[in-house]
Length: 180
Figure 1: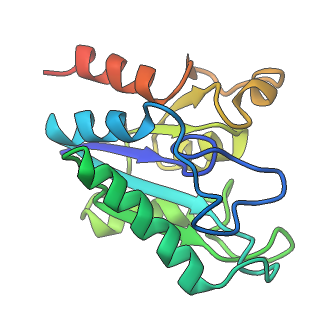
Figure 2: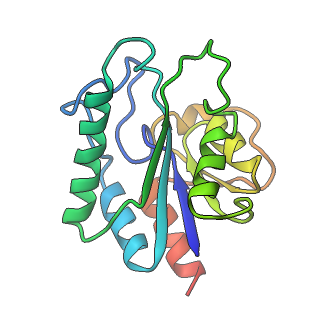
């Protein structure tokens, strides 16, 4: 299985320091939906792992989050692609959960869902250090995009072996050239 794990805000859609709180605020980054579609058409399995502390903060509810994810999936399907799994952490930063990135709980859930022992060699695409750190705990390969918070993340020391791309479309180009 060719599995790819994506962060959501800042990778697939525009990010906001004030949080993405509604379906109207969920705006795709140009080329991201097409990138997901191209990858899924080429046989990649696409999972999304996203921290959504806006739930714990009371900025939006579970139905609104579901509606945002429905919009994302619909827009990808309109490009003849698919997202195979979406997992999220609903907790705030002061929670002691094991799912909030940089912890690896969301990635363990993804591995279990696809009946994998770990995510060894799986590309993990994020715009923040915590996205990369979480995936690497199960053997994922860190891919940083410069969209979202990516340029700020580039100012910090990156995990060894991190590959840097302009955006998700560039990641897709790379993966489609690299693998048959």
